[in-house]
Amino acid sequence: MKKRVLITGGAGFLGSHLCERLLHEGADVLCVDNFFTGRKENIAHLLESPYFEIMRHDVTFPLYVEVDEIYNLACPASPVHYQHDPVQTTKTSVHGAINMLGLAKRTGAKIFQASTSEVYGDPEEHPQRESYWGKVNPIGTRSCYDEGKRCAETLFFDYHRQHGMNVKVARIFNTYGPRMNPDDGRVVSNFIVQALKGEDITIYGDGSQTRSFCYVEDLIEGFIRFMNSENGFSGPVNLGNSGEFSMRELAEKVIKLTGSKSKLTFKPLPQDDPLQRKPDITLAKESLDWEPVVDLDEGLHKTIQYFKKIDL
Ligand SMILES: NC(=O)c1ccc[n+]([C@@H]2O[C@H](COP(=O)([O-])OP(=O)(O)OC[C@H]3O[C@@H](n4cnc5c(N)ncnc54)[C@H](O)[C@@H]3O)[C@@H](O)[C@H]2O)c1
Image (cartoon, rainbow, N blue to C red):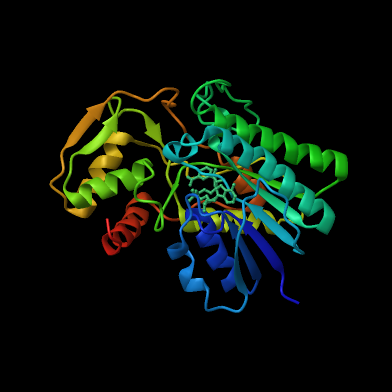
């Protein structure tokens, strides 16, 4: 019998790639999404498969289905979206985790949580290892996301300890690629869209703040290896690319690869925006034999090709 896999947030950027990959591997995939930030276009090409189903459902409400594995990705991931209705963001992370963990407990399914590097907040340690507890503002405008994800991690590890469940908690660092939402304000999509439209590229701060960027296919490979790891390994484990680039370097690469005439403009840094963020991926290398293989130029090239094809 085919493995039945539930992906919450399956119509989003990462979720749609995961649906595609798992279908390709022969799984029976159930994509659950409330389409807050996800789009039907992201998964329309999968509908011809008899082993792909979509269910419109909000994970803050309980769900009763029979599955073998759950990937819990439902949650708006970019500040413009998660700050739009911050109470709903916390509910999605916390109630969503409770509902999906409850489902996993009832069905005996393995369950994966898409956590985030934001659990480290504005880190005092660089690069960040999983043992670092983070420096997070509990009452700021990013807290609905950061604290929601931290609470979800707590729930995952409590279900693991209390009920002996097989949980997998991945802390995802900035990921980019085709199907990113063009207007969600994330830096890679912002820069590419501005460059393709020939508009000035907006840099917040002086552009010296750094980020690491992981190409989506590399990340999805990490998800699958983690879910399939049978060594009782629950994480949390960092998944991301440890190459570090400043915002200015990224903008210059995008201008070069798009051949755009865009210039750079500078605006003040938003509240609680971390100055540096880069994963230490030693644990993922050791436990999952995983590391990214797509370099930034190649990944940007593929992403730019996607943005050229869609209506901006
Ligand atoms: N992309 C990244 O760089 C990144 C980094 C760290 C963590 N993550 C995490 O990975 C997951 C996926 O992120 P993404 O980049 O694909 O974002 P996305 O916004 O494209 O996808 C999130 C999906 O969840 C759905 N959703 C939101 N609230 C829901 C709810 N209450 N019920 C059902 N569905 C709901 C949205 O409609 C969307 O399809 C998120 O949990 C995010 O926090 C992503």
